[in-house]
Length: 406
Ligand SMILES: Cc1cc2nc3c(=O)[nH]c(=O)nc-3n(C[C@H](O)[C@H](O)[C@H](O)COP(=O)(O)O)c2cc1C
View 1: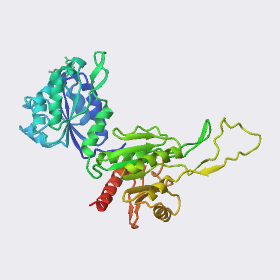
View 2: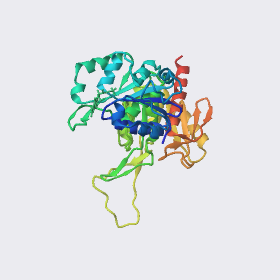
View 3: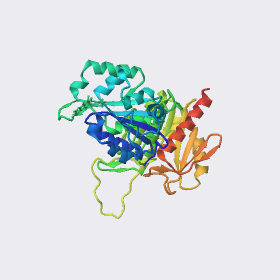
View 4: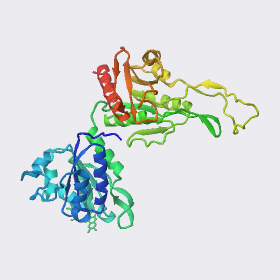
């Protein structure tokens, strides 16, 4: 579990709708991500969920009354708390509360806090579909959007009353994505077009069998996510994995090395940075049997293999002033082999990992990598989550881009 939001302060505002119970899960998930949470509830919200539940989850007093501030020592708690958060998240946000914000009112603890807050505000509306259809709401949301509020959801789906319609609180995952984006975004790759390849490839032997490898795709998916946080426009070309592509990437699903090569050839000319994190099969069966291979009489079976297209070498030959990052999985002479690969394939950076080290390589959430650049500089990073490796790598590539395009 990544503690991505370690040290970040989130003020969670809960207003009086049925979906208030989902905020408990939201608070729990934010805490697991490492965030510090201060809950502030409208009076109506306390009719749906008790402050005690949030106090138990967050280990902090909940603020409900501006004039009896349990959550602060001073009378000017709204100003004090207004300065505290890195982000204000209001989920659920009622029809009423949205109206209040759009009118610039500050007549209870939460609205006064939003008025005094300097941090960005993420608002997650949730209500009955008839309330959601009202022009007053549309206008209020538009106004808030123009003022810089980020509106997440609502979604269409089953509502509290059992009807289907628009108004359902965005899924917790969607809200967390928005919170992570708001808290982690930066502009190291702002406006850059980034291509990432990820996962293994599968090379068919017959209609039911294939040759593949142990790549989980996690490193490439983490890179796609980190590049999005860095402001890039991201295309992710992925071999088969069970992972969910990060929201906001252009996703291209492929199976074989030939399909991956075709996808990279199509996208590389329009992109500026390529992270080639996929574990592409070097070989494939020369012939794919039309029918399932039967168990033969003899003790062995021979498969003839032929080389697959070398995607990285192709991208290196067609690179120009763009940036190409390769990955090397080496189990011996790691650095010498990686440096040789960097030169041979015309890479700018190579990320070296040794899958035999504990916590590194395939099928783990962590990685221990060494980064080499074309000048021979070496950066040895400690054991980190793949997301943290991706974040650092994105910063490193951002610097490289700045040097090349001052
Ligand atoms: C059972 C019940 C469910 C409600 N659900 C919602 C809802 O999902 N969304 C909403 O905007 N209002 C809902 N309301 C209405 C709000 O609670 C009401 O407008 C209240 O004044 C909101 O106060 P607040 O915005 O200060 O939290 C509901 C009311 C009741 C009694």
